[in-house]
Image 1 (cartoon, rainbow, N blue to C red):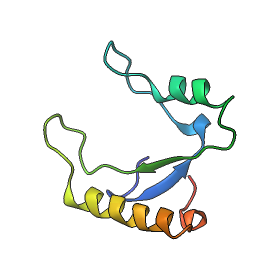
Image 2: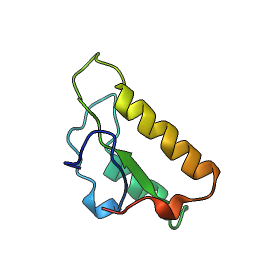
Image 3: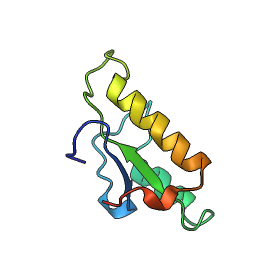
Amino acid sequence: MGLLAGSIRITPPEKIDDTSIGTHMLPLSHLIAYLSPDIPGFLFIGIEPETIQPAVGLSSVVREAADRLLKLLQMGKIRSVERL
């Protein structure tokens, strides 16, 4: 998304850019196209990674953002998440 690591955003499907396709991963655009007819109005919520290097693992800033997001979802405050 080009934001600070740990930033949380609701991202519209048309702004999701697939970076790769392979035998072991499904591009998000394909998953969204597949699910959209059966799940109207679903949200894609992204957390900006600190790094996407293989085998690095989840950074503490992203883990903290995920915890914040879970709390927002549990409290029913999804509307407080900014949109891209």
